[in-house]
Image (tube, one colour):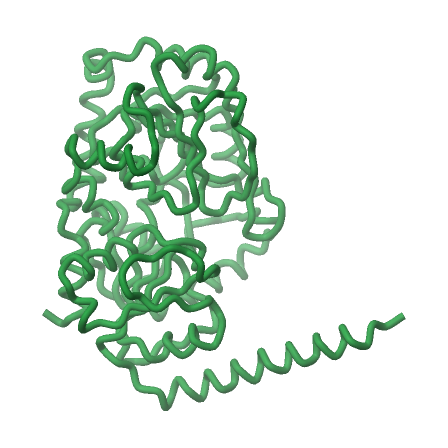
Length: 402
């Protein structure tokens, strides 16, 4: 039997949505942008983090928020944002209005497909990492949340990237890949990532202790950050992925808890609710508003797999462990790589928990340098040449036309 009330509600909703879209298109021709309104979005509106966050916070540091109106696009407007920023719900009316009214967009992922940029609005695409995994037009196959239509995926990419005016790059390696994989025709900004300014400017004991105190992280233990990526084919629904790992947390706890604390940082696309209480605070799961750059600073060592966190963390010259239990399957069936990971990464490739635990228990700074020091130097020269602590300031100069 037809639910008449639900049917009417659905019809009204669809009618309102498409009427709003029609008005939005008209508005894109008649609403002029204001150069002092800046539109920010991180991780498709899921959080307040990444490159856009650090550009915004530099605006606050310079006291420019008195003359600039900063607007944050958020899925949940309850998300904490410092300062006097306007928070708008992604895809709703005020979001659409400010996307037209803003003089600059600062976005770190692909924007919503129906957004329209005024010709006088500066679009600064910060992206979100140096690529290890093939992306965009370089991908020959996909299996993302069940989507396997590579041609449609390529078209979505190029429809999005054709309106990007500026694109931030962390190194020349990325610049070459971005131009090809994104079919990018705009201006490449080889300035490093704004989010990494903190790794240069706050890499000192006083700032690190302040972060640990604020996040309630133990100061009597060494800190390991575990930050794996997501698996394209392990998901609950579109855009919500499982925490895919074969890490044996019981064994990690038994072998390492006397000396270490393990912080687990999910990728922003991963949605899980895990009870870690049996590990007696050995495992700490990040709150949603914890910024990974601060976690880099407080960590003595990082474990990852195929995530671009490896390129940021290496700025600190601290040890990295690569827990790649599914390396062959991942490379052959999910995402191909741009370079030979086994040959280039400056840390051990561990395919089992025993290998990983053995390395950590026997780690010394001297042995690590002896085995991986030369690799680390080459890695840093290739991937970290531009991160000098000033990227946010350079973006603000671009926004202001200086």
